Amino acid sequence: MTTTGRITVVGESLVDLVWRTGAGTVTPHPGGSPANVAIGLQRLGVPVSLITAWGDDAPGALVGEYLAGTGLDVLRAPACSGRTMVALAYVDDATGSARYDFLAAWDPERLEVPEDTALLHTGSLAAVVEPGAGRVLDACRRLHGRPGTAVAVDLNVRPAVQPDRDAYRAAAERIARAADVVKASEEDLAWLYPGQDPARSARSLLALGPRLAVLTRGERGATGFTAGAEVPVPAPVTAVADTIGAGDAFQSALLAAMFAPGPGGARTVRIPAAPQEVAQALRQAVAAGALATTRPGAQPPHLRELRDALAEVGSAAPAAGTGTHPAGDGGAQDGVKNA
Figure (cartoon, rainbow, N blue to C red):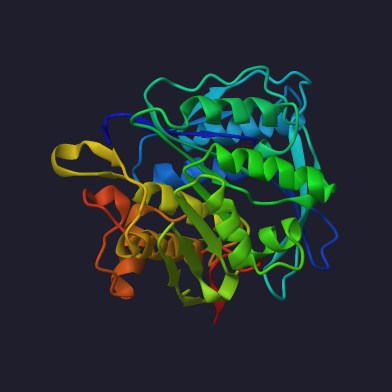
């Protein structure tokens, strides 16, 4: 599928209030998983737009200023309530891992996806918090199966926003049915399908209709599942500052691998199918997730950093923005081994 279009990311923007172990104060950081993915794509040289919503409140002012400073093409959807989502991120300095509580507000009045969208990405809170989740699902269904387009979803499960496991599982499965690629961590699937091997759960998601399911395994890397193959990719060793945004960096690099420029500069939406293609895409994604853990906060790598990281591990495939088809996050460690 050849296109001159873009990747469109749809989902929440929010303010993370980061509370580190032993600290007496919290530090606000604007972001949100979809916004982080869009910024990661921009840093990898991929044409991208972000459809999001925030309120006219103090957190919203911080979000608006932050997004304006990124240079992203931001399509702001009006928020019905006028409120901005806020997350409280508790960061364990000993491990770098984070857990979250949310003041959820995801209520865009409408979501208008640009006509030249070739690859639509969503997930995280946007796929489960109503009323926005229903509008996101409708947008995915409109693009799913349309010639020249594909849909990717990162479940990024956050039980704090929907503690009803059955309801959350139903929402995850609905959006997986409208996706070509679905990604989840072992931690995500252990919560959605308790007592079941996460690999089996990933295959169950694949059976709902996606062509590729990606399971991120923390320090053991990531595994890609297709109808005919199971492709594991190991994680690099790195010193972890924290894991905030590492999964989003992984997702950005995975999407970039599926929307690479070919001869003449035209971009092709290509869902990895052959084991070698899946391995190349996951190597790029795991490398990006690893780089993001080396600095505090959500800081996805730039294209040159990712190229250098791939060269160090001897990857045969360059990063997606370089003109050829390229090459996990996970539970707490997002596809990374601690040094």
